[in-house]
Length: 352
DNA sequence: AAGTCTATCAACCGCTATTAC
DNA sequence: AGTAATAGCGGTTGATAGACT
Image (cartoon, rainbow, N blue to C red; front, side, top):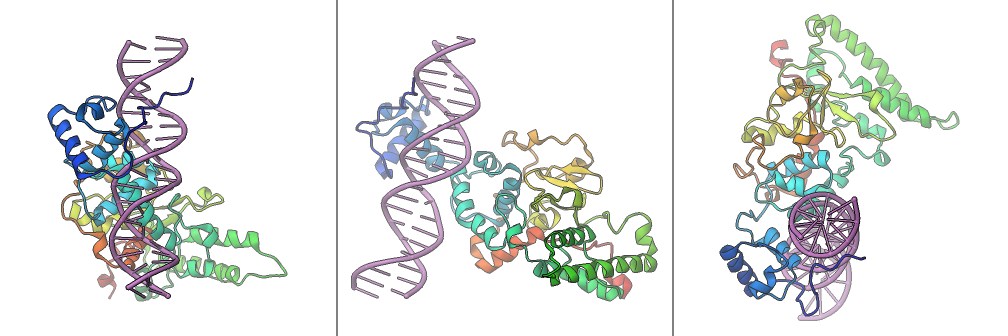
């Protein structure tokens, strides 16, 4: 037996709600609560089905709905949560006070998704799109080393340290595509870089043994993230981009959040964040990532738990509105999602 | 000024999960 | 335990406004 319709649709109105209908619905719910949505329209004198009433109320008329532009903080949160939860709009909405799943879904589809695509990031996996992977540009791009690294490396008199794992991965990729009759210049370039890179590493270790004795260069150090790719986790796609995260600043107060948030974490394809320093997963929803990162019992149930989680930073405060900036600014902002930085411990001034 | 294109978002549809009986 | 009713979710559509030609 097929499911009965939620209501008799004959004679019921569809389409946009009029102010009069809105007022009827508001008045009724304020007086009686919504009770059963099925019976509500009749009791409230509305020619609508209960489902339509519920949707109108939850997505538009509810008094606690926050309307208007999304802030930077909110967008950051949406991107991060989406990397973990996927299209679980209601779960994402539960962590954005005053926002509805519909609103977030719309915002994702019309703004964030497009921007990620434009940046060559797969909005589903939150990873660089392999089909767009151009190794030449990859080599000069942020994920391998950023400008500050280049500057510091120059100051140190060494070549910039490329991420050896990523370098190896890219080389492997190209090697697999390499044809003798059609040598790939990118491959040669990568192999050269790999050689130079290992030299640079040893050179660095000679010059600054204190950094290498306790793994300090690779493992952080407060405020430090070095992009690390785990070659074992590179499957046919780039889903497993991960990064060191510092047990530090990512989920601090809201003010710091907007500037540090995206620098500190790179999503590990739908599964949170991998802290390679201690081989643990970091709950990105917790401001106390340092605690979480030491907790081997990380539980994704927390991600899906109720919206009242105390780990949530209220997003209403210190809004920095996304829509206020230009598209370029927003792109630039988004590109920080893939940024990593040299350890602050490597105090440049100390070497000057 | 008129026509076309594009972006946005409210609302709908169809499905699954949960609850009540 | 089985079935129907209800609530909720995610994908999609369509109306509209604004930009562009």
